[in-house]
Image 1 (cartoon, helix red, strand yellow):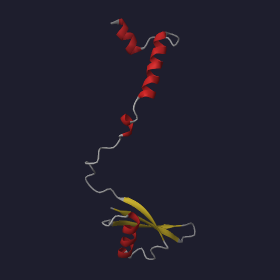
Image 2 (image 1 turned 60 degrees about the vertical axis):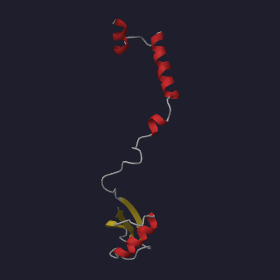
Image 3 (image 1 turned 90 degrees about the horizontal axis):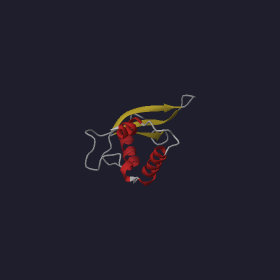
Length: 109
């Protein structure tokens, strides 16, 4: 019982063989643990989000002249994203320091 208490509370000094053994076990764990134990942070393919996740795309002002032309913007977004069913959400104008329109941030779903 005393040994288990010492292990959990770790009452050993740094210059003992117990300390050296613990350090060796930590190093073995670090270097011999398979990467696959830590790399699979996402769920496997079948489970997805309940609702589509929006993404934001930055479209240059030279590509779309008028931010209110949703059909042209939808066509450009579908071409850029490679998604034939991409839907255009909110459109935000991006301006530089002089107030000139540099592009548009477009939310797509």
